[in-house]
Image 1 (spheres, one colour):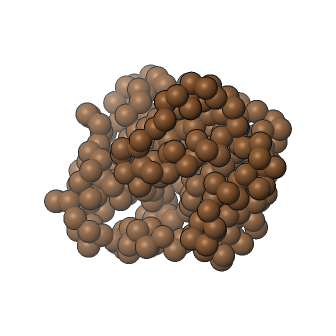
Image 2: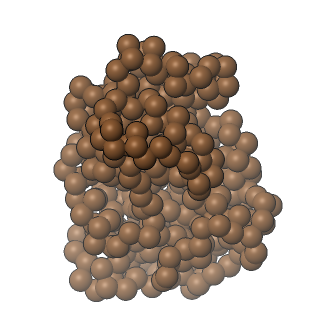
Length: 334
């Protein structure tokens, strides 16, 4: 423990599901780290779509997780649980957490933490874990993306979309994105996308066929689901992979399974939050080995939108729901 810790802390939470206005500041006990855990004094917390869905009442925290929203944090380790390496005490880390990020103090599994490089601002550090873990696992582990392939990413200027663009380019992919409007398409190209399709003005299936000379893409990273799925499959080359990570367009899709068989398509997907602690630890190890050197060298930095104070968490959620943000929204806590 570094210094004396208070008994209580400020958190941004809600009593009942609803709109952004249900988020409010409250007092809660400072948690105590258990075996394998650290307590982080939070400087910044990332705001993500799952936080919004949880606040709306559709994404309850997994058993044992904090009911306070927030899935990624950055700050200083101020207390250690049993079995944690003593050298972590006092270190600045960012971490993927199962909840509790919208708070002055947050528990994290030590093996889910990554060291913050000295030249990486803490707001940017807090904006990395959720999108980085999600994109790495779904594009490169589940989607088997490899150098020279082409990927279609929906929502190119979102936190996930911008991370998919940057990671894709760093690992040799051609990246096609869809965005809502010419301005967002321009932003996506600035982030590094090879092609940006305005889905409000163009049919993305037709545009993908044009861009790829009819060959299709090797991989689709899908956050929409619903009636997008069949359209996505039309964009895939034979042996293509379709990875779903959100269902913003609905949970049901109608498929032509004969087409899936004939073209040997692979459909998969995942949600990160309920996965086991061991899985997340292994994922953190792979990211530390494969991706973190790019963060340390400055080659990978998150695209930042805005920072809101903790007591304006409702405004942060309203901005995310409005869909006007470019990149990551964070809460300034410490």
